[in-house]
Length: 186
Image (tube, rainbow, N blue to C red):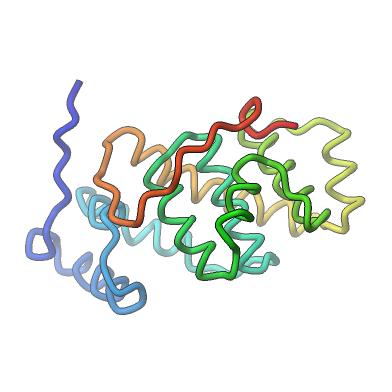
């Protein structure tokens, strides 16, 4: 199996991608390997950045919880490392991040519902049972929340699959390995 995928250097990418990578470097302090690798396609990075450049109804903690759960279920070390770092920046502790990844949020019932819903959605490839749908809306989430959640899962799944297919080197602090109960299901 081929596992020798190389992350292109800045001088190896097309000018339009170089501008996008430079903007990423300005905002993040470095160019994450996953974004650099997307430049192997002439249009992928721009399309992905356009997809990501939207606001949602979720706050940063909720957004990172969605990314973490999706990456946990998809067993993606790269995105788990990236979103662990981003979750810490958003104010979550190591214990809270671990609880989210395990599907065991005890300090916030609404966030726990979001984590469980995300887990069921990803684990079952978009199929969510009526009980979970009811719990989601009972917690105060709306149709807009449902749409935004599916969009965030889609974004994360793209990078999860790209990283799982290529084993791009992780350039974030490594996230601890956590085994979930039945793919985060309670």
